[in-house]
Image: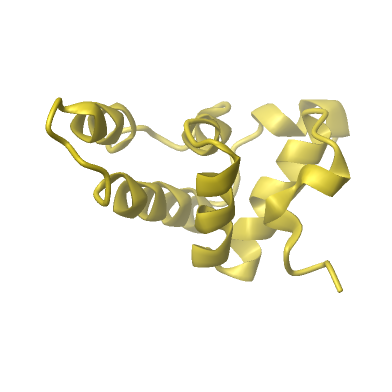
Length: 103
């Protein structure tokens, strides 16, 4: 598989479901007074594992929440995000999902 296209390739279903579920857990911790968290949750809860939906879920978060998400994920799901971020052009030193590989 061409690595430059990997960003847009769906991961295994287990990784997709895990990222979606953990992302929803994070959004549920937000103050929802104005419906911001509800809007984010509704935008991802019914997504299917197609095209770049996996990375769309991740990209909804800022750096700090991506780091929080990374620590909530299994090694497999975290790696699936990491390899796609790198394929999409992210700098390795800013890849918070590569936590399992760092020493």
